[in-house]
Image (cartoon, rainbow, N blue to C red; front, top):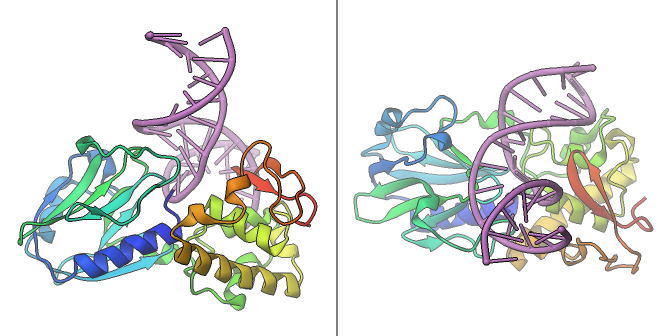
Length: 260
DNA sequence: ATTGTGGCCTGCCCGC
DNA sequence: TGCGGGCAGGCCACAA
């Protein structure tokens, strides 16, 4: 599913293939997909505007237009971005590989004849104009130890829940959270504010390491622990059977031996 | 304010 | 063989 890593690939695709192109038409075949009170006629303001920048904050993709609003794209767990029919990511988890025309939830047609499209079988993503990106915390990819410490400070919520709180730290989803905590050797159920300074630094270091690794390896599905994230799976580090539970409302797998 | 829960949505997979 | 239920999770509304 798209977490920060996949959305970063989408951003790079848009940056490489869509910038400078003028929007000639907007297709919004799924009204459910329009968020923030957006209605199809509102999208007409995009027509005639070029795309001038592709930014990302957490899992939110922001496409700047010249003279028009910012186009905000969210991908839920099954959304993907395509430019001129080429997908930004292949092989998303928890969705289908089929690419039916009906999965197209939103599209820009460019004046040069090409197009940018959002495909989302499960319809959990959405499109917004001028989204309030400041509702999100600092981006996890560039968050240093101080930012991680600030995101956790004073909280009695489970560590994992706080890591995935997009208002505190933007971009970490369920799979990345499990991978980071596994590498850092931290129990996901621990109170977020209860980490020692050394543990917080370790967590921040592994957060950066995991994101860099996953970007290099091709996606959030490429974590070390992911292959064992299944019934009967065992810890890749010490062989202990992984424990499964629900933490922060999400299915969570962790090593009961070295994650303490 | 903080934290927890349930629902949205669809496709897949299991067991009957 | 078909069918129903459970599950996946990003995000939001709502409750305590």
